[in-house]
Amino acid sequence: MKIYLSRINESWIVDRIRNEWYLSNRKISTKYLSKSDIVWIVSPWLWKNVPKRFLEEKKVICSHYHFDFENFDNENFLELDKFVDEYHVISKKTKNDLEQLTDKKITSIPFWINQKLFYEIKDKESLLQKYGFNKDEYLIGSFQRDTEGHDLTTPKLIKGPDIFIEILDSHYKKNNNTTVVLTGKRRNYIINELERLNIRYKYFEMINFENLNELYNILNLYLVTSRIEGGPQAILECAITKTPVLSSNVGVASEILHPESIYDFKTFDKAKTNINYAYENSLKYTIPLGMNSFIKMFKELYES
Image 1 (cartoon, rainbow, N blue to C red):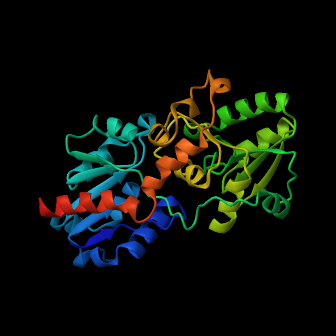
Image 2: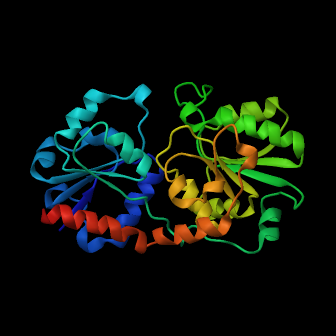
């Protein structure tokens, strides 16, 4: 059995997932389409980059991460669906959405978390000094893009940046020692709103995994405010680093976090972090354990 993973090259989580898979599963993987038995389309928006003759010849598994039905290309989905033998999703919520579109087999497995990249660091004081914070600041993190790419001013509403700002505004009025920690590209909307509200922030635009892990470790709270999500992978990254996290009820949140750590937008003040619960759940998805269910999925398809 040889598995080929489609290319992406977008400096996104799926690029890392692809690289980690190949590093950990050399014996059952190939980087040559012609030598593969199974084609794993990890980036369905780029599926047309795979020559159709291979999609016709090979068994095909296609991953989907979330569905925004207000901007859904049904024609493109149906065109790809003709070649797909089985679907993979990273959350049960996405599985429920996908079941509305196809009667093919759907397997829900969250992506693994690389515990060599993300882990708890005990010496918080040194990290605070390194990044220019003081111990009296209450640090709230957000590490995912919030702005559409076409104009860099329009909020990416499925990520809930407007909700993030609403929560921050309310929190800051109660605790003006709050500072927001941002990373990643396309943070324009949140930065503009924080400046409008005179809320302190520090922005680390493009950082490596070592720095990202350290920033998780200094946070008092990480906020997921999305309306629609596949993961987000930040939930697992928070869980494995023992970073306090609260999330809207999206993606894998209900599979990793304690119910009391999941809020709706009217009851945020009642939500509570539960570090140990999230950490214990995250251990199931560390490498190589977190890849075993994927290997089982591929083996069953190969033998079918």
